Amino acid sequence: MTITGSKSESNRLLLLKALFGSLEVQNISNSDDSQYMLNALSTESGIVDIHHAGTAMRFLTAYFATLKGRTTLLTGSQRMKERPIKVLVDALRELGADIEYVSQKGYPPLRIVGKRLLKKEVQMKANVSSQYISALLLIASKLENGLTLHLDGKITSAPYIRMTLSLLNQIGVETSFEAQTIRVKPNQNPIVEDKAQLENLLENQKDITELYQELSYEELTDVLNTWLNPDDTSTESGTQTEVSSVVAETAKVEDASAAFDELFNK
Image (tube, rainbow, N blue to C red):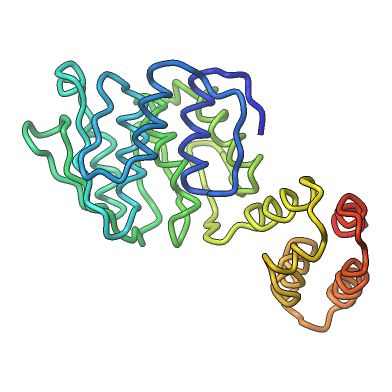
């Protein structure tokens, strides 16, 4: 995905790339905030210092809360330690997150123990920073039950909320935003990941046999069946039979581009 290079888009997509490993993003912002975000997502250290990057603090608080088994001390500059984060921490705790304030209540640094977040509904004031709302939305599809977010009061940052939802939609996450309620459906094993993997193999002009080294015949068939016919659970449907036939025929195709056309444009 190629973006404008804005900090707002970059920070959102960097987090989504960490969640959806196959996502490729080009033209990332070279701002300090985005670089701190990138470094934080790349490190395996138990201490993550995002310095003065406020967006990174908010997005990463939500992200690290979902990393089961990992304990992270999330900190920043002295100025960052004076910026409140209680609204977001309260919402994440409502979903089941394990987050503690290391020093002053309501402010960084935070000790975050990643875990499965099973609750799916939370309420938040609508006039808070859109980054609090976006932080929840960005991790929502990786929650086992998705997320229903109820906004209380007048929504003051709808454009940034819609930016986040648009980026989620572009990578295959289903969302809705009606009145005061935002819903993000769970997407633990998104087809976009499998489709992106197939596209990368094919667009790189690799031989079609390498595709079958990455995914077995059965796995590839399942991916195509689910992608082309997501609401049909029958294993004997006409669409699935047709797809299986396409897969079998495609195995004979040597040219990767032709294989892509055959598989995804039929």
